[in-house]
Amino acid sequence: MDAVAKKLMPQSAYMDKPATDRPTEAEVEAAVKVLLRWTGDDPQREGLIDTPKRVTKAFREMFNGYDMCPADELGRTFEEVAGYDDLVIVRDIKFHSHCEHHMVPIIGKAHVGYLPDGKVVGLSKIARVVDIFAHRLQTQEAMTAQIAGVIQDVLNPRGVAVMIEAEHMCMAMRGIRKQGSTTLTSTFTGVFRDTPEEQVRFVTMVRAGGGGI
Ligand SMILES: Nc1nc2c(ncn2[C@@H]2O[C@H](COP(=O)(O)OP(=O)(O)OP(=O)(O)O)[C@@H](O)[C@H]2O)c(=O)[nH]1
Ligand SMILES: [Zn+2]
Image (cartoon, rainbow, N blue to C red; front, side, top):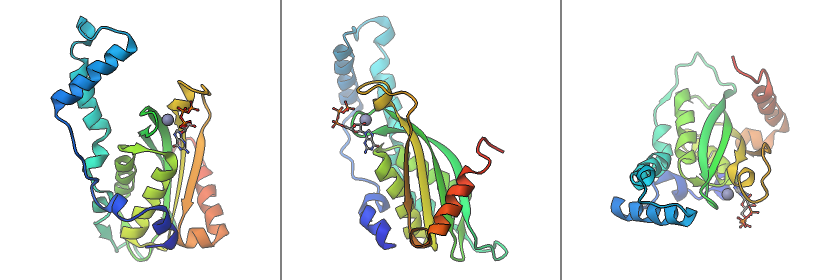
């Protein structure tokens, strides 16, 4: 593995599906009822009676990233690309995640680029990797490093560049209450880390023609 990626991300943290010790659905529903009482509302009123069930189901969906292994998604590669070995960027991958501090949404976009070394991966797999990490409790820094780390490790390209821009609802809806501020993070490995011109090329291509095709 690339030294920077290794430092940022211990291998076991993304190669394996994280160990989970899940409670029963009944236990989760009881916990949601407690939270409903914490809001000051009445969990027994008609509109809330099925809410614990719905929240339990929604949590399984929003956090299904714990049941998936991002490395598995990158397993199938293609070599027949007419000798193409230049930059591949998947830009504007929208995601929803949750911050690990407050469990409220992080809404953003990831831009992922890599310089292939003979083999390329299906483009959708890059977006799947982003989604898997997004569907876990996150910090933006960790998510950026995790995406770069697993692509570098499994695909072994000449370099990986990941940039994430996101709005943190825990800064907008509570606390400091600053709406509209975005946080930018980036991780570069291999050629991108060693060659500033490659970083500039990545950022320029990410920024070029923003607003869609
Ligand atoms: N570095 C980083 N910080 C984050 C991320 N998501 C949320 N935070 C911040 O995590 C910090 C948690 O700070 P704490 O002081 O422990 O918690 P808090 O009292 O709820 O903080 P406030 O939000 O300032 O009220 C806050 O500053 C959040 O804005 C993230 O992805 N990365
Ligand atoms: Zn937070």
